[in-house]
Image (cartoon, rainbow, N blue to C red; front, side, top):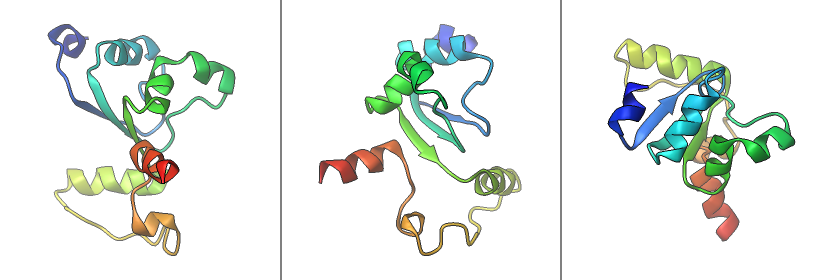
Length: 116
């Protein structure tokens, strides 16, 4: 709540189970205030299209106002673990031979591909 009150901007929200699960009012306030720049998660969108159409965070992601980076859950857990241990990089075979090998999947890269 203090971040919202202070108006801190360009925030990156790093999650592991959906952004601020159980705190949708906080994520909605961050989106409404234009404070959220990026979300890094294993999944971030509602599993129900009906709920997603009404969720401010999902709307902002789909409109390109908030960037979304998605990683497989095990890879995301290792990113957090290695970062906490001071390890700047690691290798995981997940995604080898796929589009993940060439670029990070994000809402920004998806929008770039769709525009081509």
